[in-house]
Amino acid sequence: MKIFLDIDGVMVHANPQKQLDFEEDGFYRFSELSVHILQSFIDPLNDELILSTTHRFRYSIAEWKNIFNVRGIFVNEVSIVNLPVNPKYSRKNEIMDWISMN
Image (cartoon, rainbow, N blue to C red; front, top):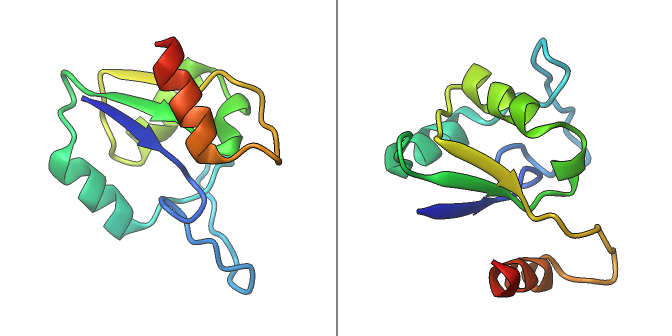
């Protein structure tokens, strides 16, 4: 299964009034509930996380895998929606374009 994953508002809160917590690797600490929910349906041997988050270009694929592993999310493959971030272009359109191309 391919799972498109955002970070802000999904794995971490999006409340500008609340401070974000960070892990030792310098990236956000994920919500325990979000991790638990993702772990409940992800198949670590067969599923692929496809990052649609604006953070997707911050790290290499190997670094992303490590970020997820440290937070208890194990997955066979990690990739990104490899399209430039365009604030005038919706996330839905980015994902639909990715699906069309892949």
